[in-house]
Length: 355
Image (cartoon, rainbow, N blue to C red; front, side, top):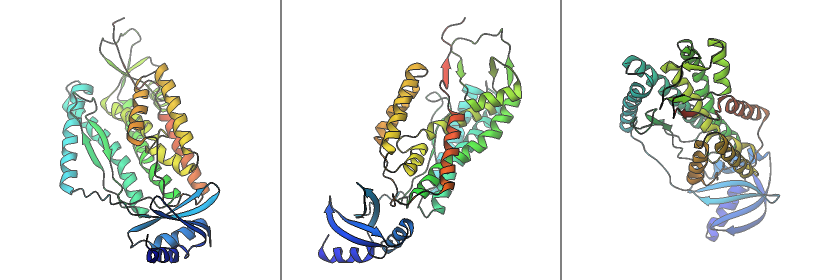
């Protein structure tokens, strides 16, 4: 920064902080500070000062010192036209209905449509929860973008839906709120869909034997509880397509809530543990590898994908110092309770040999 910019930025930072030291580090101007008010109020005043500029403040606790770093904004505006949203939505309706017809509904078109609409609703409300919460927090976020996949390649006809955030997350509270909103919304819709779907499902007699090549879907704790409450004792269940959509919704919820990288669970842990989040990420990764070696190799693949895409890192919010309130801590507990209820050690298995 030039001398003029140095004076200009210092004046803005002093709106909320007393400055003890200034230094340059990797192109950023770093101030060692002490807040004039609460952490949140002090940083909010400074953030407002930089709102219309090409720079952003980042508030961190580094080796016991409070620092405000002034960095240049990164342009990452993603303009997604409404037509693209619409075309991908229609394509996903087609591929998911096709998947239901081929994989789950035994050629029954009406059941295929029920499967597609139900699962799309769960995935859509999940991402819409993220998007609406982000916008409520002043974060520029797109609407959900569905990702269709032909069913021969993937049995559910979609890789889910995504949103893009075009502006940084302001603080830890917002990060946790945005991360938690999607899975909670999707989970709440899963419950009635799964309950009604199980009511239409049928218990398979113990004497029946699965056919070779048949897909067996593994249960979560919540699935077992609901299935026993609705159907009684069972060994195998012939699931209605509506129940399969509910099962898939729980599976997607558990995948997203794993506390790693920039998954939803990773956002929540990053908000909870601004200093030690990496320890949590790698602990969960090692645990999943152990579970994968014992139960289902897909967990090892998922750890690999998350590591490849996120490098087990997270940029964090602009304000990484302000504390979470009790309500956010309770929200985090609810999120991880949902993960425990939704997690499936063996989600999918194939019958290889008739017995």
